[in-house]
Amino acid sequence: MKITMIGTGYVGLVTGTCFAEFGHHVTCVDKLSEKIDLLLQGEIPIYEPGLDGLVAKNTQQGRLSFTTDLAEAVASAEAVFIAVGTPTSRRGDGYADLTYIYEASKEIAPFLEGYTVIVDKSTVPVGTARQVARVIKEVNPEANFDVASNPEFLREGAAINDFMRPDRVVIGVESDRAEAILRAIYQPLYLQENPIVKTSIETAELTKYAANAFLATKISFINEMALLCDAIGADVVALAKGIGMDGRIGPKFLHPGPGFGGSCFPKDTMALMRIAQENGESLRIVEAAIEANGAQKAKMVKKIRDMLGGSEAGKTIAVLGLTFKPETDDMRDSPSITIIPALLEKGAVIRAHDPQGMEEARRLLPDTIVYTENSYEACTGADAVVVMTEWNQYRALDLERLGSLMKQKIFIDLRNVYQPDLVREQGFKYAGVGRS
Ligand code: UDX
Picture 1 (tube, helix red, strand yellow):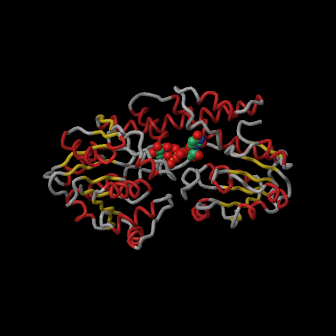
Picture 2: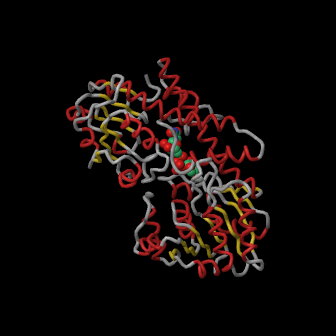
Picture 3: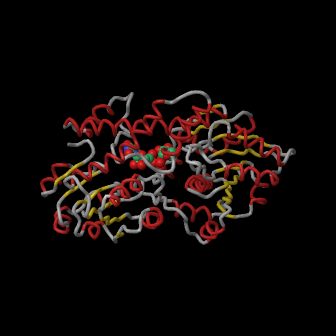
């Protein structure tokens, strides 16, 4: 099968590479020549574990190529996937910005040859696939194509495994021909008996938002439970185990933290709320999950302040982890982007470390932050250390060494990776989230 992937971001590059690994012939196209140049030199513009090896292997074996030339890539393809960004609109109203989707649709239209399925891979509001079809027809009334929706459910940092071993593949199609092509593309997964869920196009588009909104709600729920645990002296980790072992609830996505971030949950929950409002409905649970997430970040600032005795002014805080989760360099909507400036505004001095995110953090965060080579250097002279992101390298810090480097032994574990008693035994004042 010949596939063209438009967009070489987290979704496009992982999906295109994994399709090539399945045995398909994939051409990845991006407008940004800097990105394509990097990929042609064998370099990967993003950090995603395992991706570099797979890109190298499939490029060498001739199944994966990169280009800025849309014309040739589109003409020869049986399926064209659109995997460009759909960020929150710059108007700040929560709508998804579909500029790149429509631009891509217009650009591919003149080059379509023979029957082609145009697949929306990006997360897009309900009805977008039909708009894509309209745009293509306007530009090229002769084009022979169907549109389809095939949302991704990849977690950054675990994207390749998620792609190769998905819980399900959702395809929204309205023609047998498009369905046959999509089923053929995912045929290699049949060996693992991964179910394909076939739906209407609109249902597929909505399924993606509903999945992310549900997961985000689960996180906001456990975050609120954690706050209640803090208030009444209960332990949220045990509580999460206690409810998660009920098969109807499930143990995943019940880890409290400083709030959810990343490229999906914050923007998709907002966009879903707008989709509902536009259709005369309200999603009060999703709205509450969004609001609780904002509050969670603010409460983490208060937690840090309280641990510092009521004021962060003049105090040095070591922040370990800046990205929204480990194993990614992605800083989009990371809780650190809200929490750190709030601490700086009240006069704190921030020393920070992150294994992958510091370059992007320098662009996004105030330049008064001191970035360090490692976690111990970050903690040197600090009044408190905050574990913001649960990178593996922060999970087993040498607490004795840490304590000897710090001005005050205050440990704030916003990801609950440490056992409170063990940290306290080392003479630290400890706070987790919901573990008072
Ligand atoms: C998410 C979805 O999981 C994926 O299916 C979708 O396609 C894209 O969005 P991703 O954003 O990469 O993936 O990461 P995920 O692991 O879901 O975490 C999202 C955020 O929730 C992170 O900030 C993470 O720290 C937080 N989180 C997750 C929690 O706070 N607690 C949890 O229990 C799980």
